[in-house]
Length: 245
Image (cartoon, rainbow, N blue to C red; front, top):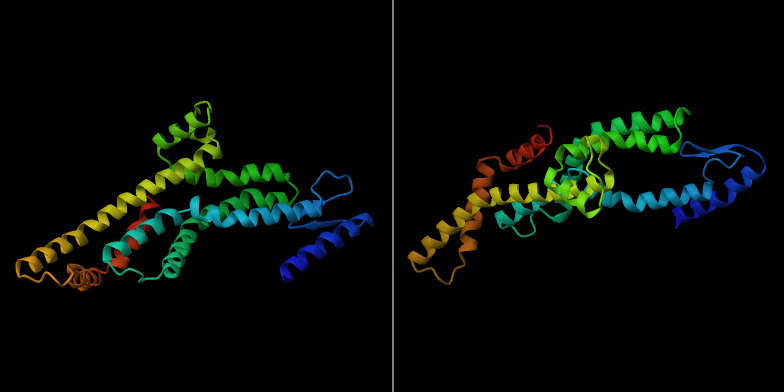
């Protein structure tokens, strides 16, 4: 409620200030008398819209997608059900994604926002320049097969170079590529734990322990194996290195 009151107050006070001929700006975007730039209420609407889209952007066009898929598969393979909890896995995936995206975000800031604040670029030019680092990041991990699929779906002409790809094609192609990569890594993680389950199930059946679920016996062995090989370090280290190759 407090945020809504602040936004509502800005929407009322700032246009009144502009009507008195006093210049003002919001988030570094000036609203002059000539009406060439966006009005403050429109800027507030755009800002709130972008804020609602921010969680979807973080989850889909960053390494967060691959990391959270792999961590989910790892928890299922260990058979620990809800340990670590969803909040812990999401928090770990979020901070790892921010660590990978930090250079990209810095480049977007330096190429887009700083020149716009200095008056060297218009907002439209700043968006175009600031999107280039993100475009390069997505193009590194999007598979050619997925890009070709969305080019056909959108009826877009084939680009001459990767730099000519539009984000409307590159973003869904990147999401599909990351999902496939995450599932591949998850399948590989499942194999050693699956072998332990099969061995424990064979042993319990051979000695006649039919009433005791094999999962209850295999879970401690899987956790012990994971701890002995320092599994968290190996999994997180391999995930992070996969983004820097």
